[in-house]
Image (tube, rainbow, N blue to C red):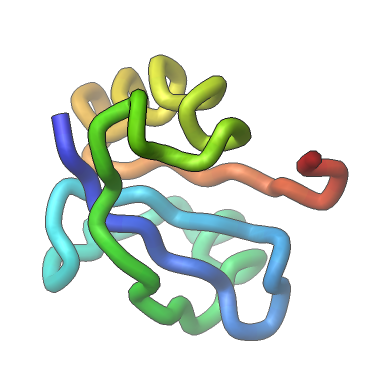
Length: 79
């Protein structure tokens, strides 16, 4: 499954993953406030072509996108 990758403008370690670039679902108020405005970065790639950090998180991201339409991740401590 491919998904769109967005990054928070005000909190650059916060990422939002959605089904499509142009479709950001309604987020819970606390998550929306934490993310603020987001900037589209790119579409995901096949796991074997993805960055190692994203490839390791891909199963969790896909589960969130499939079940809720989005997945949020704080990569403050990413490698």
